[in-house]
Image (cartoon, rainbow, N blue to C red; front, side, top):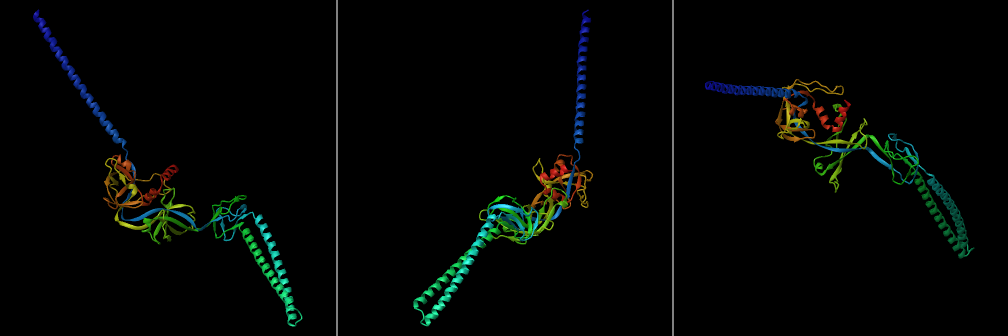
Length: 447
């Protein structure tokens, strides 16, 4: 009996060990399965992350070799040739306005007529006074002639001893008095004539005429308006010939001379290359006197405005070219990119594009989607900047003919090292660099 109990207890212990061993096996199997499932999920996440990195489309331009022009961009103030401001010469009320803004007028043409009632009345009074003075002169001349005749007769009688010396002296005194009366009358006549001339001049000031041949602008006059003396009323200038005024600093005065080449840039809201007009001209005059307060002086550029594209009062960019830098590889400024991880400055190069590839010509007929290359690898290259121009830079570390990415560097830096490349011309890149942020937004909205 005791022997049977011992056998049963031993069997129970063996069964317990078997159960514990089975639990460990099951737990180990579960952990293996869990680990395998997690590794599959991680692989799926990695594959999904790679799939999310879409190959971006960027724009690239071919690096060139040459020297950078030393350029200083200034703002030019456009003025018409012989631009003059006409002001009221007298105080009064405007009766007539005979011209409108934009009207072409000839020299001497009547522009504005002011009320002249008061001036006309004053002139009439002066003319009446002149008539009185003229009559007094004639009266004094007649009196003088009579006194001369009396004096001659008295002198003749005195020579014959037929009259006394007293009568001769009296006739002489009367002649001298008559001569004085005539001189006084003539002086009064001159005074009256001067008053008439003054009144005529005052009357003429009621009419404002064109002092030159040109176009009317900035009209600040309306019929019935009460104006004071020296009130600006109208501006006239010759729009076919313009003068661009540019302020030169003390430093620039040492570099710029009369005859220096300049480029006048008529900017546009379009990114189309042909819409950016660059007009070459020369500096016509430079004032030799610097302002004592600002230490600046004025340079003037004379240009023809046959197309009437420029208007007086405009501010336009003026690039003054005053030399060249040493030769180097040239890239647009927009290609420069600062690596957010290292802070180094460089560019992205699109590899695998041959130097024989020509840029795609982009014009206003494009729908906004231009052809691009198949995905190619891109590489970030640090550079040394040798010289900076206004629109481009000379660098070390690149070769002429390398395709340099100018648009889309941010997409490339966070991508998979590949990009589709749209090759563009330097003209397009430079045109886009000149646009303001508002211009780009307008272009996008128009598309």
